[in-house]
Length: 281
Image (tube, rainbow, N blue to C red; front, side, top):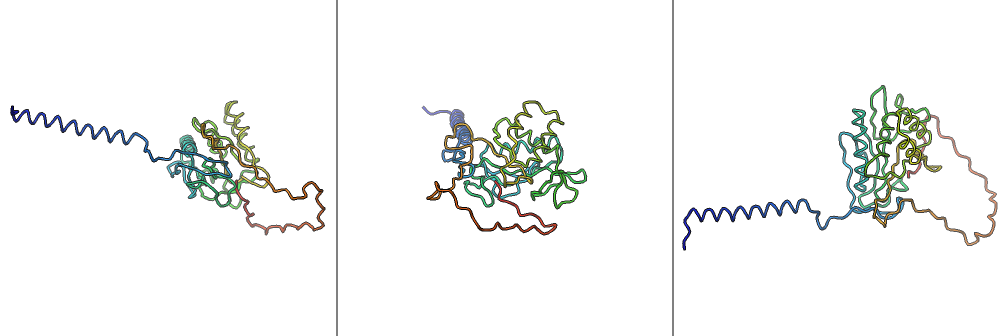
């Protein structure tokens, strides 16, 4: 039996519509489902002896400025930095967070660092002020005990904005901040500002536990060094740095002989010269 032309058109329309619906559904499904070849984000090993897999790149935005090429990290770390910078900018209009090194794309060693190898470390520049206005620089400026930047006249540490940053890091909903390394005299300033800003008892307690001065010889008087804990479920990730063992001499049980060599006297730096920066963590 031959179908009338109107019936032919109707059947053809149904078939075409069904085909396009199937194609659209397939496209939508492909867009929402994760790609089979995508690498799951993983922090492998120690902060100072490890690697990074499936990291994401931190991008510059209205609230932050990425100042280094080593700007890869776990998604949770990159998200932490973005959220903290946005919160500071929301509370203090015009604030821009200058971000230093995170990790290399695949992790591993970075020049002038003892860590930053597994996607869980980031260096954050201080919020600075000059003549009442935000002072933005990619250079990490040393801040003295009075809160003034050395070698930059009139530039000072902004207590309010830096505390807002630290508070945002501590209260983040996703990342578990493990340590915020900063020089002790700046830690004192931050805790004083926290009390002035009426921080809650819980936040103060967490700040006291997390904000720490680095070990002797590693100054953090020019930036914050933030480290997050390993994401839950990542069994090949280790929170704490690997111990650096010193090989014992064959005669380690014998008492060491006293050296008769004179101690070399350190030459004082020239007046006004910038001190040589030490290797960062």
